[in-house]
Image (tube, rainbow, N blue to C red; front, side):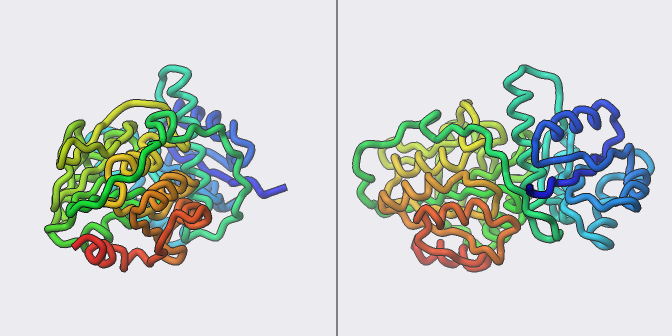
Length: 355
């Protein structure tokens, strides 16, 4: 039997602690090692046992989550999943936590419909599992219980026609998950101002994507913004899919644009990389270049294979530069990746492929 993932929950809200206990305990691969109301209590718990993963609130009395995160990473690196209430200022703070070494961000569970609670359970458990498989942190790689998954068919049917003939305008589509926030920063910062239009799916809760896009925009030569329905995909701009909404590439005449829409979880995610990649297959064909980056699971693997079969150029991030070598590994295994490159070389290859 595979070793279970031991989780330490740190949050000042008793309601949130109990909710996370209930959610995480429902997964057979996860066990709750302990809970703590603040970092000082957490430190006492860790004297008795070391968790595989810590879920950590951002704002707490006595010591805030960012300070505790920095102490963990400097003294005994352990995979940390930040838990935020998705307030405006909190989004910026949680993004700062990713810079300090947190692996993932999850939403604090809230009351809602049965469907929302089920989707939240999937997201939270997947985030903890992704953290357990991430670098750094020497942890047991668990066997993963797989929830039933919908394919991109749930949002967009597979095209029966030939891929679009090549034109002079290239489009870049990118998918990333765990570890993707920093990977995307490194990739986008290296691109020139006249880079072909880019559409990105980064698995991230809603309300975080706007703050993340603003952060990238302040760092990059290209413009970066959270995608809105109907936004035109143009040179020098990257559009980031909003959290909890699917993003599809569409085309009207010579104009590429994005459609932002609701829909079910696809490959356990919304937005889904598979949905974006399938839409690129249908509406861009050989004009597209696809990149799949660090992330847990297999979202984007089938979509990348469809793109390559349609004549698109495809690139997967290599294992050594990934925080979690899940999504790229599955794309490579399916034959979807034409090239496998270190993160630091992907931008230069995009420039070469899209003159």
